[in-house]
Image 1 (cartoon, rainbow, N blue to C red):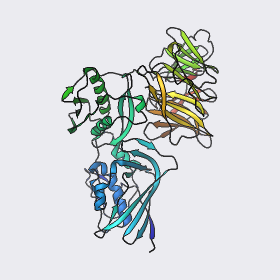
Image 2 (image 1 turned 135 degrees about the vertical axis):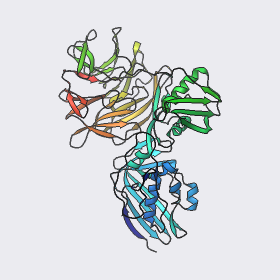
Image 3 (image 1 turned 90 degrees about the vertical axis):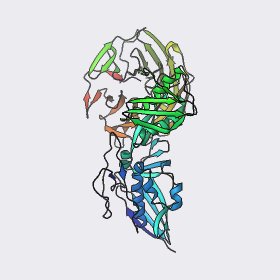
Image 4 (image 1 turned 45 degrees about the horizontal axis):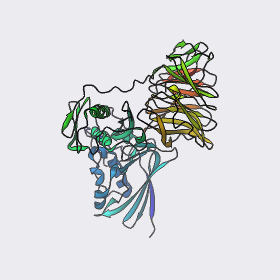
Length: 555
């Protein structure tokens, strides 16, 4: 028996979704039209979708199913299950994964029918995917979403049979229904909280965050963090409630932690939950004991608003267009082109010459140096370790106050490392590496002992879509990477890369060679090939009037 293929186009899948407060009825006829969705900034918007229409064709049924999936975060996928066969309604797991396609595209539906059965294939350009734990991974530029739906007849109506677990959403639908948050986990020394980015449904987002904390950190950041959650703890039957801006969390199955551990636990939970606009305070009960802390830790004071730079007059601090020089250390009287400053103290600086890495403690006037062949631009972490890499051997080199070195010193990579930067919180390092003929960005997790000494790098992974053409890299806070990217044709762009988020771009000055960022992507300096320094102001670039070199924000 021959199949009868046909092809349809599905304009933006949730065109028919409406907030529950809307007065209009859902249309039952007419072609779907392109649309976009405004992402809510606070609270929750609930969307609804209609049940299967009697006599729907296979492609119409799949269109309706995808619209119902887009509304699934609001109705716990009850409507979406109506499009499935009786057996599949019980077995389908919609929260297993999310495939996200571009809202700017029109997904294509290919249909093949054959004696009581049909196959509908959905094709669209992929943007990203999200796993069951809420971790988003951006897709490669040429990746595609392809989802195949097998349909059978039940009661003379088409129904989807045994679909793959997970759902397919447009980016607009995803942004309307899900929110980016950080789960926070303590560093091994307990002095800082390390972000672990996730995406959760806006509906019951506070409960999702608590559930994420209980499950623990993602595998990629686990070597760099601990958790203050008591072993065996689980949410009580009442779950998490929010009333009058107070989140009440009751954990069962574990004993209350010691007094010294309570503060760390409250810090971790409260910092995570207060990201929600619904939560201003947190009450936490563990093992029947309600815990409270008079004051939560503040964490490190990251000093990321001013940059370090050099002129003929000395080394100084650049803030906006203002520059304040101080004398060079003894034995140095020329501009130092590759400088770095600690993210927690303006008193600790480092620089790299062609053969050495030098660490300078300004208050004491002391310096320490180690030999490094062709070192990359150095980076200083919050534990006062200075990092660099030998660009001709791909070898890491680290030095600490007093001349101490780390077991990582001498760690070699087969490929060249042209640049590296450690995140302000000290948990991750981003490296610009040449692998074969491509020069792209790689991120690794830093394992440390309880004193902050780096002991290993793990989970070295490339950043999607940036496998070639990257010229320089910086951190903007501990959760965003900024890359200076040369595209085909030679034009330069800044790629802003939130960890676990969507990349977006800014135009960069012509012939840009170096970039450095402060506390956010709004604090940027770019140095061009002619040595000029440009600062970003709103949507334009302004040249810094001083003749400075080696400008770098801390880190």
